[in-house]
Image: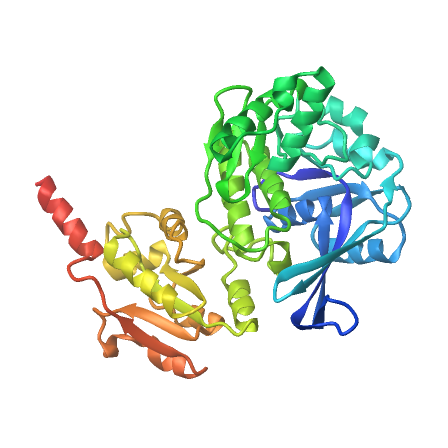
Length: 467
């Protein structure tokens, strides 16, 4: 195993379907777009997505959820079986399905069918909960959490991801993770129940939004009797409240991709980190980073379903998936490489220029062992995790890939970028990658480099100043 703590997920599973095509005209009989050449992709949804993502993180995951014997449930079992243990609860009705129709990646319409609800708990489900070291409740309001509420009261979850159709989290839950609209709805219902006119007042302008969110989160912490509430705010990050003095956790990079499934990614990451022993604040920071990267990689629609549990890519990055999506849309893939030990103005200028060449930029970065072989003892100054985090924080960088060799030929052969970029301080003879790019019709180029900037020069100056 990976050394990560196991996780039991309790909640309502869905089957999600994306029909993706292109829309170039309106139907002759109605003013609606005609979406043509649709590809179909099935994936787990709801609590099943949260459990699936936790399993892809390398965890031993058990999912307790309502399942019937219908076609949709059979498809969902097929998707989940290689990744996790399923503990089904009997259902009334059929498993819920959500079908999105997308044109060039943008949703046109969503079709829902199936309103099944978990009917009752089973002895197997109760035993799985009793032996759980950590529990995530992903409550989509379809009965699973309600069926096990008594057991959950005795074994409060580390994370409860609520839904307006579901019940309140059980007292003692360590972290509740509503989205902004959900938190506002819960707080408004609470205010109406209490007859509190001030709490019922709508939030003011944008300048007052954070104050309103903090006020609502504080009220929910006290009313629900939970340890903390974090309200997810999309591109603004998340606000964490223990009942006073909230902590705002901003995103590390802004992405404008498909947000579908980001809440499940957030909850699964936070629950996993808490199960591993992280503090609540640390878990929320990690969850914001993971959810942001998830959106940047295409959201739930970008899941490839093939990554092994022991994958060693930097968490949250899927360079191959990004490249495939850009290429499928007819875009240009640009890659750049280097050690990036001490990120400076020369690096930033080069990467910004590289991103302007195409439609995405993948940065290929040397591992710590590779840097040491190239630069000598004492290098890198910054370990790989720090270098990757700094690169990801740049708006011009879409993904980071790591290679352990002295040069990135193997990685480039996997990614097959259209353009490979190096700084102008390299001579043509110093670009062994150029011949490789020609094999698939790519092009290696040099870009002007900001003179007088290099990590080695910076270290030399710092050493001189110290003396």
